[in-house]
Image 1 (tube, helix red, strand yellow):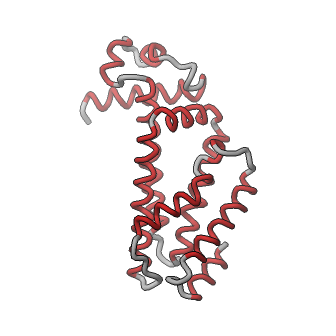
Image 2 (cartoon, one colour):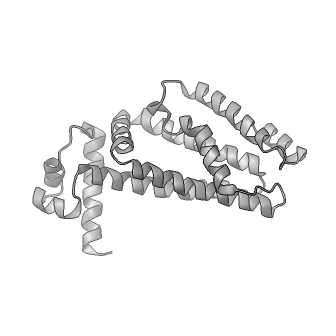
Image 3 (cartoon, one colour):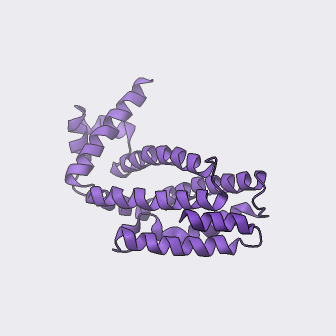
Length: 208
């Protein structure tokens, strides 16, 4: 690993600890630099600002999450509706527990979503790719066929946006959010009825 990458990792790890303990808003670049035994000027050579460090932290975490989501999307022994359900519920539970466990993470998530909308767009784009992979796999298995998979993936995201980092949108408890997501998922699956066999719909409902 290049020395520059090693230093960047050191900075990211130091910032994680600072953000988690003191909060994103109350952490300064000078404090992160001190934790890394470097000058603020040297720190700025690696990250132009605090928000860039926050984005690096979020990116690292999200790339790991995407790999897990892809495994759920391609899981053998489950129909497309079940795999979609697994993905949506994993997203809800992961983000809900993350923000409940570390309330200070909510501050950073809110700041990134407001100040770096392009980052949120990147996350959504990567998730759409996985949803399209799920639909391609369903087509390969002979479960259903959808002509415009990218549009369908976008509409699935639109319908389930509330369940991504739910504390950004509401203060509902996890059981209530799961109940709502289950209802929305039912509508989504039934919306695909022209393409789904009765057997696939029944299996998805049974998995719930």
